[in-house]
Length: 244
Image (cartoon, rainbow, N blue to C red; front, side, top):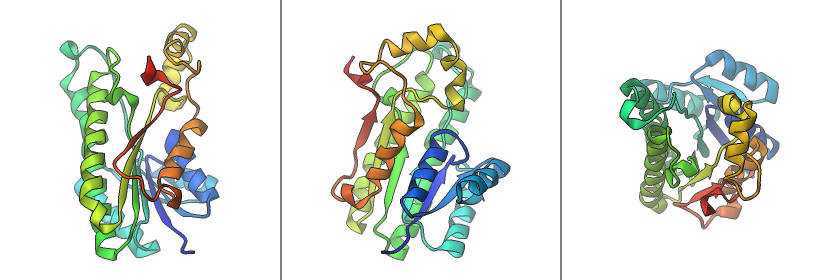
């Protein structure tokens, strides 16, 4: 069986690093792609992955990195669009437009640019590949103060469905995993506040905020042959929060 080439954006830390490690454990060759070149190199060394510097919101950077991966390792078989940020928070009526723009630039524009570049490469190379986007249940369940972030994730869900439809004739599947809150460096601030954490966990029927290890298996599954007849879905991994 051919060793798959897997690219994980934002793979230097948090959910992305966990995803990269899981694909490595499954026998894939993994490229950690991150805007922080030093962090990507460090993560790569520590978990046994390759590394590439990549600004997902810059078309030139995306095209160069995708071409470099193909030149060094071969065409991409699996793309995980994990890189994302909230960039701040607050009511929409007072939100700084720069916070909104930064969030859109990374979460939506970046996912689009990566899907465009890798999808085109897969089609040209005849790769019947898989793209998995990391979305959020916020796309379907609003939280005050996070409207800008949640709007970008709703856009990612819509892009997932459109890309799934367009790429299906080429045997390329496109899906998303939509976590609720996850304990990562990005959420350390509120998770370290006992009252804030308890308030959020009260919204989750299973009673706890997810760990990275709770989210990773769904990403690996959606990219696997076992999910070979699944495309265009956004799979909630939220402890039941969308039920409330």
